[in-house]
Length: 260
Length: 340
Ligand SMILES: Nc1ncnc2c1ncn2[C@@H]1O[C@H](COP(=O)(O)OP(=O)(O)OP(=O)(O)O)[C@@H](O)[C@H]1O
Ligand SMILES: Nc1ncnc2c1ncn2[C@@H]1O[C@H](COP(=O)(O)OP(=O)(O)OP(=O)(O)O)[C@@H](O)[C@H]1O
Ligand SMILES: [Mg+2]
Ligand SMILES: [Mg+2]
Image (cartoon, rainbow over all chains, first blue to last red; front, side):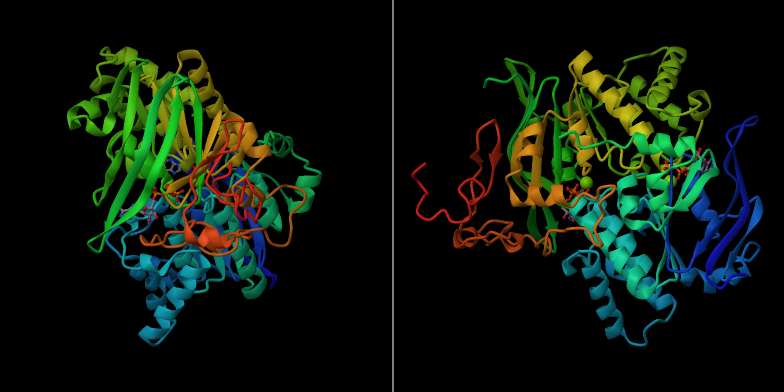
């Protein structure tokens, strides 16, 4: 195993049943490496299996076939308990923020949870300082700490999810459409934040998005998926400048242009 | 009134209770939606777009209430009702049949215990639009296909959690469109779908507006979507409308510094800087006593006046309005006030 590979997946497959006769291959025979410190973007049409693949990589769900190595160690068959130490290093910001934040917890506790679980800081004051710092990073005001998730707008919930995910400084973060409901201005701030984290902390990021202009800004490499399989994976400049696969060309050609 | 309007939001105010204090989150919003027209509403995250939309069909969350203004519904040019004054029962009836909304968070607005097809069919049943179960099922399947769900017959039987994020959004859109509403409110309805399906859905909305005179209020942060389907755009900042204009006018001649900031923060393929341009500063906390312009702390060409008085909406010609002291006169208005 190469030192520069952080996470490596080989031949992952996942099938879901639609009804008694029909099933769908959400992920079929996917192999990929995620390098340390890179931002790998995962793009492709809605329903092609991006979120499912991310869940398989982080072992949130179990694959039917294939294996996942994190820093060279096989985590495919680990029990939930044995996975715990890996959970700190791999965080996911879910696509649907409303259903992934615990509605009964205040924002302070939601963000503090990973810090407490992993005992990052030994005293309360340091935790509070870190929370303040995280809120600033995602452009939220301190007055939101005592509120509950349902008291926030959609975009604010997305940012709370991001703050929680980066709280314990994981090695890998998966952002599933995490900036898609943000206005371009806050979106730019969050994208800059991710880029800064990458530059300074060598954060590795799997960035799922359907917005190809956002991807062009953030990604080092792009992986294009269709129907559960990878159809093209290459350096971002290469994909944008000279796409090889027909589907990639089609995707690039259908980006809505600002008409004016 | 020269335009044929379907909906007029007038001086709408919404407040939320926070620690026993009422905090205004929508402050004096005016929006006109013409019959058959598509109006875009853009603005910073948390500025009150969803609250404005939810006031129209009166589904504000607990702790939030409309504290002022009116929402006038013009059934026909002579017939007007204030939606805020309707009885609960009347507004629910209107919302099922004439006003449909696509919510920003599909998972929280779909019933997790019911197959998605049946959920859509329920709409037809409750509002007595179609009684025959076979016919209505067929209608639902057709609608699922129209919003780009592959294998709609099979997907009719899926549970919400079995769908991808973008598919759930499309189910919501199908549910809203199936009863051919007069007004569609789409709140970030295509954020999770890819460009090709987004285009298909936008076409569908546009077709319904042209063919059956549906009107739409489209809330989005995606300027590409705005430029593709909207006729008119409203820009919202911290609870109030700061600029409104016909779509082409807004893109070619943005006047408010916030709008200009919005347009310059869009990442563009091909010429990406090391870091994206952003508007400096934070979105301020709403504090009641402040009398100046809401944007003055983040504005580059602020003058003294901006800290002293809140600007009024002023016309800039071409049906273009802006709430800014300096946009029309340049950074140094001097004594010009009152001379126009
Ligand atoms: N728990 C499940 N049960 C059944 N089918 C599922 C389940 N989860 C996902 N699927 C199906 O797997 C396919 C891939 O879904 P996935 O959520 O990975 O798509 P996606 O690429 O993330 O799409 P989107 O961009 O719309 O979020 C879809 O057809 C979906 O319906
Ligand atoms: N139940 C609630 N209690 C208190 N405050 C709330 C509640 N719901 C929303 N808010 C606040 O009201 C403001 C307006 O929220 P709204 O949902 O209208 O924003 P939005 O413009 O739709 O933003 P986004 O683009 O992020 O969805 C936000 O600042 C939010 O924090
Ligand atoms: Mg997804
Ligand atoms: Mg909203």
